[in-house]
Image (cartoon, rainbow, N blue to C red; front, top):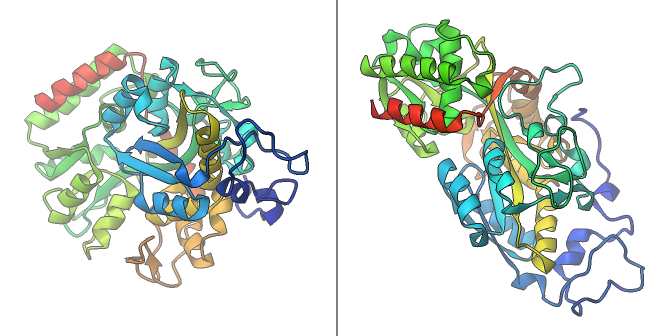
Length: 438
C-alpha cells in the first residue's frame, strides 16, 4: 500500500465527468425511467422521489456514529442520516432481531461474524463504489504489507466477503461482494497515568501487577475483554494458546480463572463498557492502568491530565468496523446508501476519524483533507510542528508531541490479535460473566 499515492479528481468522478454524488443529490425522475438515452452512464435507475426526502436510519456504537458526519451528509449529499448509538452487545442483538428497524448497520467485524449469517443484511456490490480501490489492503487480504503476518482472531478480511449477491457464507478470498465496507479501525493497548506510576510499563502482564492493586480496570465487553485478558495471561506465562482468537474451552477456563483470582485479590477498581467511563476512571485517578482506546487517552490529555497509550512488547489488540446495508433496502434509498458509503470513503470522514486517533479505511483519500503537519503526526509518527487539534478545534497535543506508538505502519504492523468471535463463544460469554460477577 502506498499512502502517498496521488489521487486525481477524475477518479472520484464518473467516466462521463459528471460526479455521481452531484447527480444523486439533485435526482428526481419518473419512476422506472432510465437515465436519458445513454449520454450519462454508470447509474442505476433513480425512482421518482427527490433525494432530499430520503432518510436513512443508521445504528452502531458511539465510536463512529458521529453527529458531525450526519450533518456533513446533509450538506454534501442532501438527504438525512439518523444515527443511534448503542453498546456492542445491543448492536449485535438489534441487527439480528430487529432487521426492519434500521437501514444501515455500522458494526465491528467480530459482530459481523455473528450477524451476517442470519440473513438480515445484503451483500454489497463493490463495483458500485468508485473509491473501493483506495481501501487498505488490510481489509482485502489481511496484510498491511506483502510480508505481513496475519494476526489471530477475527481479522476483517476473513468475514469481509461472500460468494454472491444472495450469499451468507463468508468467502475464503476477495470477491465482488462485501459484507461490510470498512470505515474505521485501530490498534489498542493499555492506557496509563505516567504521573501516578513510578516505573516503566512494557507488558500486558503489568495490568495484573499487585503494585496497581485497586487501581486497574479492564473493559467489560466479553468478545473484546477476553482478548485483553488473553494478552495478559499469555504475557504472564499463565496460559499458552493455540489461537487466542479461537480458544478451546480449557483455554477459556484457564484465562477466566486467572482473572477471577486477580479480582478476588482486589486488583480491579472497576469495569467499563463505554468511552466516557474509561475517560472518567483515568482522569479522576481512580485507575492508573487499564484497557483503553486511543481517543480516550487523548480525551484525558485534553483535560490537562497526563495520560499515555503505552506500546507493549507483545503487540496490540486490533479492531475494525464498517458499514453494512439492511436486507430490505431498495430503490432510491439503496442508491442513496451506496452514495453515502462511497462518500464515506472519499476522504472527509477519514480525516475526521484520523484526527480522533482512529484510522481511515481509505488512508489515501483522507490525506487530501489533512494538513501536512496533521498527516505527519497521526500517520507518520513525526513530531508535531504546531498544536494538533481535534475535529472540533480543541488542542489535543502541543507542538513537539509524538503520537504514542509511532507511525501507522508501526502500530498496525504490530497487531498480535483482532477482536474475535470464537467457536466456543457461548461458553466464553458464560465464563466471562462469572468473572464479572465473582
